[in-house]
Length: 361
Image 1 (cartoon, helix red, strand yellow):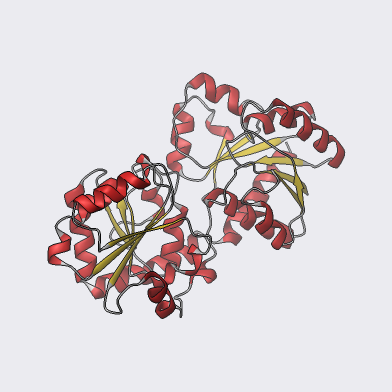
Image 2 (cartoon, helix red, strand yellow):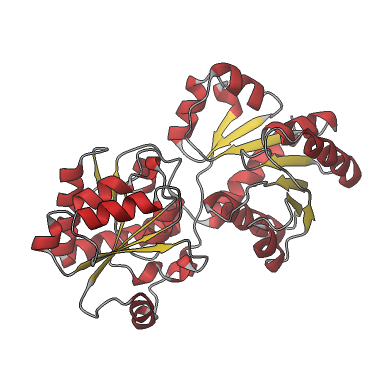
C-alpha cells in the first residue's frame, strides 16, 4: 500500500512521535509511506533520521486554505492509495478537504479528548472513511458528538518498551539535576496548562515535605502557567524540593531513572507519557480521568484516585514512597503490560488491517 501521512503539529509531542513509530513499522512491513509536515516542525528531522520520506508543506493552522490547495496538488502528484491525517492543527479539516478534492480515501487519528459541538464534529469528520480513537474515552466522546459508531476504530497508542528499559545512567542523571544520592525521585511531564493538573500535584506535597523530606519532584514541560506554578511551589515551602526542568527533547533517556511517575491530568486522551514510564518499570499515579484509566491498571501497575482529590493523591504518593515491595511489583507488572498490550507491532498491525478494510470497501 502507498500511504500519505499528514502531521502538521509544530512540536514533537506524543502524537507526532506515534506517527514516527507507525510509519517506521509500516515501512518495515513493505508499505510505501511519505510524511507531509511543515518545514522545521518537531517531527521533521526525527522522521528523516528514521529514513522516512518527508515532503515539507507549510501550514499555518485550520484556516490556512492555501495549505489545502498545496496538499491537493501533492496528492494528485504522488497518487497514494490512502491519506492518513494525524493532527488537529490543519491536518484534519484541511487534510480531509484535500483528500476529498483529490478523490482519495482518507482516515484520521483523534488523539485528544477535547469536546466540540455536534455541528463541528460533523463537518470535521465528514471527509473520512474511518476515525481512529486512541482510547475508548475518545471513542465515547466521538459517539456523543454524533459520529457514527461504525466509522470509529479504537487503536491505542504504542510505546517502544525496549527503548525504556531500566537505565544505567542514574548517577549522571542525578548529577545533572543536582539530586542527592539518597533522594526519592518523583517526576511529572506535560504542558504547564490547567488541564494537566500540576496545581493539584503541588498541593499534594504540602504535607509530605514534613513527613518525607527525602523526595525530590522534577516537573518537565513548558507552558503559560510556568511562573504561576513556581510561585505556588514557593508559597507552599517546596522551593528546595521541586525543580522545573522545562521541555527536554532527551526526556526519554531519563524515564528509567525515576522512582515514581505522577500524572495529575484532569483530561487525557490516553497519556502516552505514562506508557513510557510504565515501559521503564516505573509505577504511575494519576487521576482516574479520560484515557488514563486505560493506560494505567489501578492497583496493578499504579494507583488512580478521583480527579481533583488532593488528599487522595497525596496519600497515594506516600503509599508508594513507603512501600518498596509494592512499588517494585507495580513496576514489573507495568513493564509486562506495555510489552504485551501496547507494543508498536500490535498498533501497526491494527492499522494495516484498517487500511485494507477501507481500500477493500
